[in-house]
Image 1: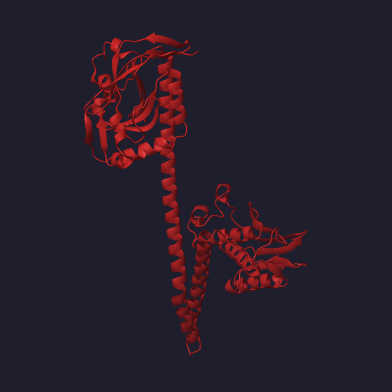
Image 2: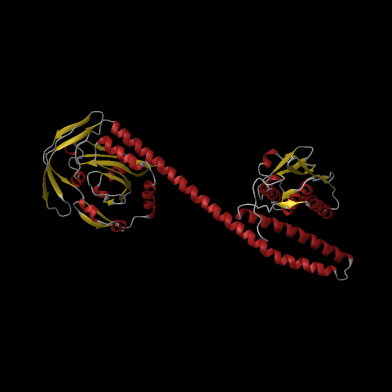
Length: 476
């Protein structure tokens, strides 16, 4: 339906704003009733055209204007409020909300504002009447009704200012030249954040309940999105802090482990020189104890460096190649541990009838860690059993020991670093051996599983004889 309008415009010079006097037929949108033609008497409409006279840089510096009162220098926007404005800008639904507000009510200007005790800042704006205020712009809060809304916590709805007993003589409609107005508070965590508001120089039917309900729903939606934004920002900040702390910790571990090698090598060399000189029995025993301590410290350093390399480098990398002597390498590990634990029995049965494509050095390390774990935590009166077989196209390597079973609740954390105190209290060591073994298994496209009951605890590696994908071997 076309509506004819007759307009007569007269420009009256104003001190700070253009005052436009016009006679026209108003078209008011009535929810559920369509458009209604409404004759209106001549009246003065003031638009804050001086708001558009400021550049973005001026506005960021705090220059604002109350229409009809001229520009006034404001203090810079606090960073916390700038963050709130930015948070509103990140909510993708805001432009659509403002569009629905304007289309539903027939009003020409809608905004989401951040309102404090002394600031009114537009966070998002839809302007179809050339009001002149843009997102990031600021009004003198004393010139608005939002200060009163902030104090009362209640919405303000005005259909027609000239017919409203409470706001007919109010300074804000006279200053900004609107006849219809609605503003609903946005509450974030129970605290006043700002308003969702709309104005128009024409009257509008707003007090039918449906419009106010819609504004309230949109205000709640905006508050919910702001809360989600804040929780996400806090989570991201906490995660970043944790990552930075973890990276710093692992870098420290790597540097410390590397730097410990030099003094440890000096101690080992001094011990070897001492053994070449004539010593009494007690001195020989002390030198042997020193060599054992050096060996244990070297193992701890290797584990710590593996941890740092695995975490900082994104995990272990298996330098896989055909290993025809893998069974011999694994038997050598068993022999070395028998020498290190002369009072313990280790039964080994390693029979590999085919060539395995693997990182032999890493698999030897895995087996050493599993056997050492069994010797440390298993029963001293029962042997540690090592079994290595090829079943189909899979290498199975297992280590079993008798002793106290591992609690079911502890198994979930068994392959995590530094978990020994949780799994088995009062045990010495860093608790890295099983984590390193699990990482080596994963690097070989395999799995490391554990079963534990009153009879035995068994760790089993299962890995394919050939890699599922090509793995590049770094140059030496």
